[in-house]
Length: 600
Ligand SMILES: Nc1ncnc2c1ncn2[C@@H]1O[C@H](COP(=O)(O)OP(=O)(O)OP(=O)(O)O)[C@@H](O)[C@H]1O
Picture 1 (spheres, helix red, strand yellow):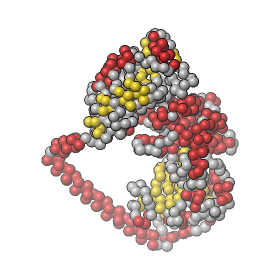
Picture 2 (picture 1 turned 90 degrees about the vertical axis):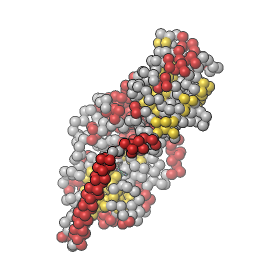
Picture 3 (picture 1 turned 45 degrees about the vertical axis):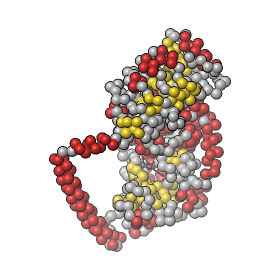
Picture 4 (picture 1 turned 120 degrees about the horizontal axis):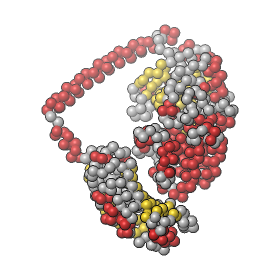
């Protein structure tokens, strides 16, 4: 029934009758077989993704009762799912996303007892062609993957799916219930169920709550008054030095970041003296003063291994990132020597370190502010909901940029390594170019914990976070590459619940012949670069080899990425060409005074 004039389909027909394995049998046609595996005349896997198949599904498919995997995603198939799909009792994986299917999905499909992955998403190419009806509430085993997004499904989401990510249901305007917004009736029901006692409890609770808040405000005001009195004293009599004081968003702060916590760095810098001033790198004596920095409105960007990082926006509008280092064990002399060495590390793919401040109580390092944040935020912020989509070209350019940055650090000597490679330390410019941050900090401050191990980036041989090595960096980079390709954080709950790390998860998926399912959903539309993706995945796995000696060096990794992704990288380069000047506020603001640093 699958016969057509395409050579590939004819081959498939003859293959179904015998024991055959087909790979890329239609090399010359624009489409490619992902594979058809027939074991003893029984079809167990049928994968025809993005082949331009059209028309409705053949009724004969229901006879393939041993079929475990059916993937027909990203074709132009129309019509309904045939009733005889109910016979596919062995079916584990059903991928029908990205077609023009329509009509109600029979309950018997949802009820297939062996199903673990079901994707019916993105069948909404026209108003007439999409899945309709409701999702039946059935007593079926839990699914590993489920997606019905962008259809016209209606009604409430059954309880068994309520813990899934909301992206699984997006784009169905008539669908309600967790994880989407509650169904209109549900809320009313809840309200009417509240007893008189419960209502009284809520009222009393609220009154007590308000009183507590008022009390708290009263104490805070008193404390603040005391602080203000303190600031009117001459500098030598002030009590606080180098303190970061939380401040509510106010006109004074000049901030624009809504609910983000605002802070202000204050210091009794009145003492003067050289060791109390900001030191800048390069041929610049002064870019801005400590006082200007301390007057800047500051927004907490996050807390990390070595301290807290703030975005400081100066009165004239330029922004920098300031990291307050905790637990610096080095003496002042050692600190200054080491940070001077770090300041000499200048490379296109490293976040420029602009300067530092050292006093007994405060150690600050000042970087360029990277406007697009980190790769981690881009991939996972908000659980991935509403994230900026990262296309393949951008991802390969980020991989190459990060690899080059790390390779540069390694090129400075056999003991020179980063020690904390992870996606939150890969920052992005306006044009999404990668810049590695936090280099050299491992030599200055003690990590307050070993988060790399906790978060899955740490090489198995690293038992002491201070003993960093180039091969351990390669391992962490490999994990970061897997993250970029799979869209899964190494801390992803579905991995950790099973006690599996990212490389092991990828290996297991590949062994199951699921090599394309391993990639981030967003990447599945780039069928033409599947080969690049698979090769990059293999490289990432090489980087995460258990034994350090088996891992490639970072410069080899960088040149392999360049070789593998060459066509995509060229495209990205062309795209960015026009935006080159718009790198970031700091560079622009200080270009004239700062030329020494920029050129270096
Ligand atoms: N120069 C910068 N520009 C923009 N955002 C930054 C900059 N430096 C750090 N950040 C962001 O600030 C947050 C905190 O960074 P920080 O380096 O303190 O911790 P981390 O990267 O989460 O962990 P670690 O300290 O282990 O590297 C992160 O989200 C990071 O991406």
